[in-house]
Amino acid sequence: MGVLKTYGEFLPLTPDTPSINLGEGNTPLVRSQNLERELKVGELHFKLEGCNPTGSFKDRGMVVAVARAVEAKSEALICASTGNTSASAAAYGAHLGVKTFVLVPQGNISLGKLAQAMMYGANILAIRGNFDQALKLVLELTQKHPLTLVNSLNLHRIEGQKTAAFEIVDSLLDAPDLLFIPVGNAGNITAYWKGFKEYCELRKARKRPQMMGFQAQGAAPIVLGHPVENPETIATAIRIGNPASWKKAEEARDESGGMIGSVSDEEILEAYQELAQKEGIFGEPASAASLAGLIKLIRCGEDFSQKRIVCIITGSGLKDPDTALRAASPPQELEMDINLIEDALGL
Ligand code: F0G
Image (tube, rainbow, N blue to C red):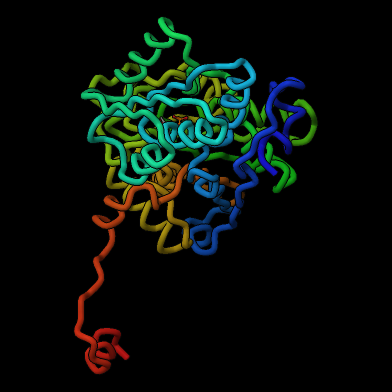
């Protein structure tokens, strides 16, 4: 049905907003089959945002931002992106026939995301710089030209993304005790917190969760308390050194009694594989930062045995085949001989 129809009453829509939908939202909330027991968590759920139409949570906010841009007769959309925002903007731009410009950091965007933006027909520039520098340029361009910014500084993005918090409450019939979420530009943690607060005010939830955000260790400005000039991490989606919604992420952390921590690339890769091999959930590396954060806290002695926890899996693992092929074992090659095959399979 789409986010605009399902949650329209909570979104900044007008009677003139086009009612569009590419099938975003209503993503599965899956109960853990193995890690819950192994990690001794009371209840562990994964929210599979990779099931959105372009394979990430960005679609929830993009549908609102692009619908409003079309309503305002915008000539073109523009964003800086580590990949997922550009794929989503390009898809909704194509759906509504609006030109889409994207700036991505050259060499640091995963293959699937680049392929998506190219296929949807966006005008893509791979700049020789990082995401933070690309965003700065995009902001300058929006000052000079009549372009609609569709980064999460566009508040329609945040409004749309908060619907994921609504879905979690609608399905658990309350907020979880803790929500684990990767943090990059910090729009998503801001959006979830807004959603949980609104549902609580409307008495659709009795409580609000502690917001547990995780950045990659080489790109952890909020944890360090200062911008990181040259952010580095294998999780290219969150390779960000100066998040646009920094203050709002701190508010979410402080108002909820949560935390923003960091996880190393090794911890991210471990969680990435655990999630795939123990749960059958293939998220992209940045997505695994939520689970990596949970595992890290448990190893440090935290007891979550009485807690209900949701980890947000923000994007699909299919977007980054290179990292997957490097992380997992390659297939064994063999002649077409049944005896050899039986031997190889240990049958
Ligand atoms: N997970 C994935 C898969 C992402 O693509 C992003 C951000 C995040 C987590 C972090 O979310 O920025 O709201 O804190 N991707 C942006 C992009 C930056 O350009 O696609 P955030």
